[in-house]
Length: 236
Image (cartoon, rainbow, N blue to C red; front, side, top):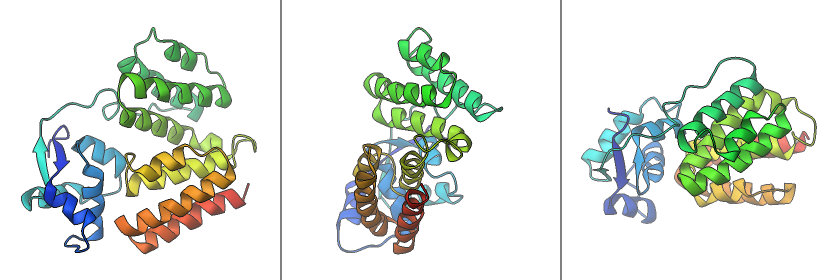
């Protein structure tokens, strides 16, 4: 299947998610939920990297009228940007620079901020700034994917970082990863987790996310999500 092919949820698809009768299996409902108003195959693969049957599910949803094809587009600067090799800090910085060069330009202040980030704290601050810039000049979904890809590359350093970097930061990052894979970055619960700045906020967001994941994916996925994220909070 062409990775630039784009789909949108149809009225039948919306009824499947909002109605009381469920005709689709949980995995198919999850994909249908992620399709939303417009998404490409490449973007779906970014969100569901472990879903080997994704293309078959899309074919089924398409054939049965739950989704429809819309004008194709080529994702800019994200799906086609490979993660550089090397030490996590340098790899994350180079990845951020490649994406920013593509979407914001090498002369943008945020590009220079990332370029001059020589430690984890400085890069985290620059990435946060970059996310806001990309949301304003590109799209919120591209901004979110930018942040997630850079933080995922930085993960080995964050896991062993000092308490002020670790703790809620690592729990929040893991929560965002799980929410992205199960319900997508456009879900309100993703925004709720993403806006958390305290332990109490994150616990509240996890409770909300657990209910959504149970409805869209399964009760077991929801329980695993809650257990894993709260465990990270308890350990720090």
